[in-house]
Amino acid sequence: MYERMRVVIAAMFYYLGITYLALRINERFDQRLLILNYHNADGGLEAHMRYLQRHYRIVHLEEALEELFIKRTQKSVASKRDRRRLLVLTFDDGYIDNYTEGFRLAQRYQVPITIFLIPGYVESGRYFWWLAASKLISLLKCEQVCFDGCTYHLSVPHERQALIDIIDGRARHATSIAEREQFLSDVQLALQLALPCRDLTPNDTDLPMTWEQIREMEASGLVSYGAHTVNHPILAYLSDPAEILHEVQASRQLLEENLGHSVRLFAYPVGKMQHIGEQGIEAVKAAGFTWAVTTLETLNTSESNPLLLGRMPGDTEVNWMVMAAELVGLLGIVSRIRKKYAKLFKK
Image (tube, rainbow, N blue to C red):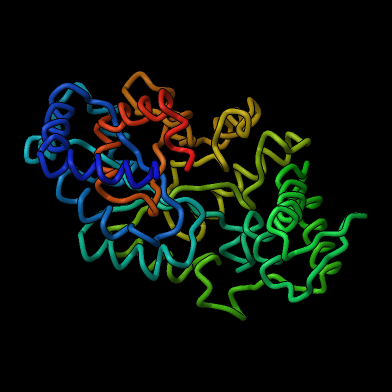
């Protein structure tokens, strides 16, 4: 009910011109940089891109950050031509659908995008670890599973989810890459299943892109890249500072070797402060990155920490009119109404 109400209110804002007016006011008085964080190129991404391309000045992340931090005191040539608000589209992880669908849309709407890659997965073609639990349980054909001394009835939704949560939690909180990979290997052996890989299921959109696809997109001028560690651990959970440094430093080296140019951008896995840790920030500094993005939901100014830049979530399941209203701050009032009258939204 709440989501339907948000769409109705957002549509009212849009068709009455309130969203457009708020955007024009933001362009005049709010000079903060807005970075959106997507993952898969699915759902309503095309509707999002169509709206954003029409109403925002979209550039590559590196270009936007140079303008924010280096050229803020000077009006750039681009801003003289185009007074629309500056915005960046980023995609984390490098899913195959970033190539099959995201690249197609970038070409169609001439929208530049920045993708943060995990070179260990690009090279191996393995299934991303954070999707492993759901995928393995979806492949099971039996009615019940004994795991870690407990029995789970898969036809019971909360038991099925509990099994997924246990597997995911153990992988997520691993204190080393070796521990995580050994655990996932043991889970597959116990369940007598194997996770998909790119060589056997090349059309699975939850698998990573290839270097060939990555280079093809970059050659178009519409796609740029940053690093996202080698194997996507949660940096704050790793016990060895040397492994933290390796994950960050080697991700840059591998990207530069395969792309043939310097890489200055980094994205922290998961990306909240409790996932980054002080050693994660220090590793990014030591690796020589110029900028690093988080998933902290903030906008950026020239006073922002260049190694702790904020990004707003890009959710392709959200209606494009809701997204448009959220980006200009209009739906905050809806959230306040929801909290005040929470009981009305329970059904």
